View 1: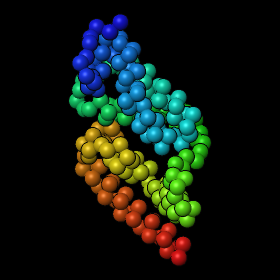
View 2: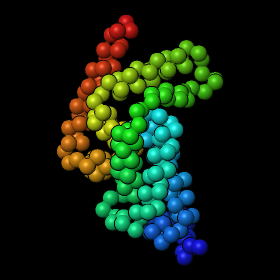
View 3: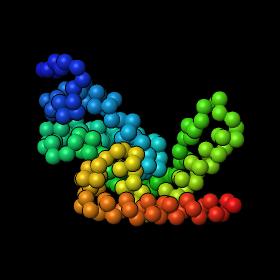
Length: 188
């Protein structure tokens, strides 16, 4: 039984504190708040929906077991992504990755077929270009642009210096631009 009553929505830090005291409802709330983004990140890391779901469960178990050790040096989201990253690395080492295609939720039915095909082609080109990036550059781009982490937060998740995040982003964006331009030339 929780020993707290919040007025309004609890912060992530309040949830972690409650989890540290054994409040399973706080864990459920944290999962509801961050689970979808963590799952999307994990799918990108392990390239398999089922494996990503298993890893996400491991992440949440680690949160349950380690909440009392959360020092608050980073945001809760950064802490969760760092745990997810470590668990994904372990999962990749233990299992051969299966490459499942990503779902395409592209355009509403009201869009003209030509627009849908163009959007699908653009997404396919972007996916191919992202896949061609070195893994460390792709992961850095994903953390900053998809998960909206700041440079220092991404550095904390990756265990690297903030300056390294900046240089990886610069190189990744430059390479991504070149790859997309090459793809456009090949299509012409």
